[in-house]
Image 1 (cartoon, rainbow, N blue to C red):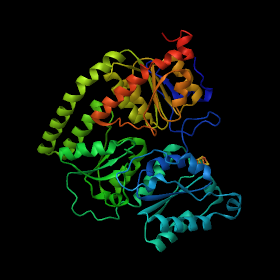
Image 2: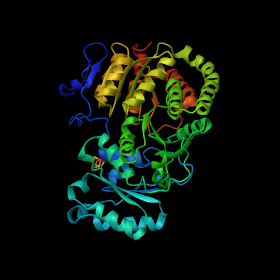
Image 3: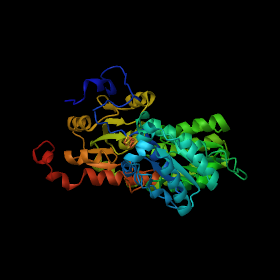
Image 4: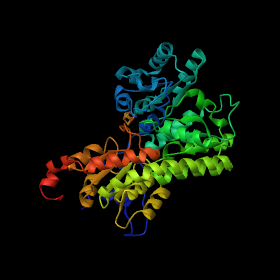
Length: 450
Ligand code: SF4
């Protein structure tokens, strides 16, 4: 049974049951209680890991609390990003304007924390009262001598994807302002990894081993100075196309830096990412090192995966993630473990991405855009899944139904990227699916689940 509202039917597709015609990238249906976040949240998740910048939320305290330490992104140095600052706008500020408060907060915070740059996020109420954030930021920038950048992210201005664009536009103001002397012709920027559990360190290490210099992490373990010289890199390597593709496009237009899309999740996609970068540079030594690296990693990994494959073959998985590009890798990773993906969806997927998902998934697989808890519950029950992959908002849905869960989003503490990440993923899926705890759930005891 499908608990979807009539107005949502065109955002749900079942592979093979009718010609593909899925509607997406539109504002969430009012009252549907979408899993999707607002524009402000979208910009916050992208910029947050820049660790030596000040992040000031101009708005009521609730907006700051909603995104406080939102990704838990790891830093190898400063950790200013983990503090969340807010101007805490109150009723009187709404009536008389919040500009003075914003100015005072910026001056105080910059003096106290000496950041390398400041990002100031606008929220719904700031869009309504019309504070001139641009002017205040300009004034503070002139007085304090660091970049102070307004992020135009009023929550009501669109959906989460518009927040990604706002974040990319903010970063574009930093890029191009640093010295690019000494950057190797075989150099890249890593876009779209947020270093939730140390992934960017693993990825950087792979690139280092094949002889490619990484100029800037955008934005996991990010630094303002690296962003300022990122236009000196020879290539932008973009993961999670939803969040940083706009920045790659800006850099292509303004600085002629080409880009490619990759994914670091799963064996196939990780290897392909390295080969694609090696291929781009057309250097025989880089290609030789890449082959050697992939071969040595697979020799260790594949025998270890066999144990998990044996136990998990035939189990069913459902996926709901932020950007649908990540879903491709997850579908492949589950296949490698012998599992069947029976539902896959995302908050911000594009028509092209969903169409590709329809092509690679098995008949009957549910593909869904911008869903909500009621729909997810009905899909998980209908498909009788063994594990659900999602983020913080999907976890309780799985647990209430007595279904295993794997966090592939903000709350993750185990790196799931790279070759090592595939093993971590298999271990996590195995321990959740096979956990004896499910025997005590209503679903198991009522005989629904053998
Ligand atoms: S910006 Fe608006 S929608 Fe987003 S958290 Fe704040 S009040 Fe809510």
